[in-house]
Length: 92
Image (cartoon, rainbow, N blue to C red; front, side, top):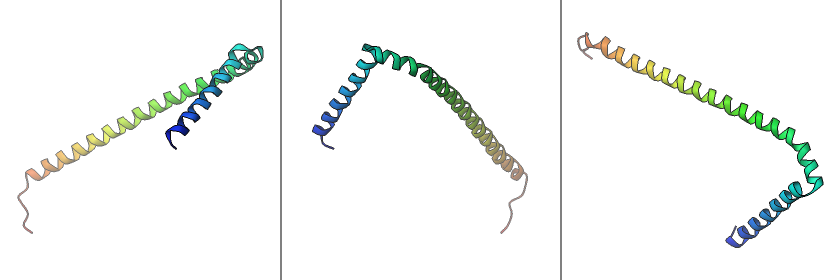
């Protein structure tokens, strides 16, 4: 898409957004539409907050799991080093 097309598309989308905003906030019918939409928007925002909280909890669980795996890896590698330290070298 060239610059001229992007500018035209942006102008059209801006005009559309302005028209919708004008309708919703400057007309009586728009006020009624907003009154009907507000409860649904409140529910949507509540669900999005809940989803974000669940995502944060999942991220914390993943980080804790990765830390536990790293601790196990460090423990296993240091245990191997300690276990091999007292043995004589093997001949192959």
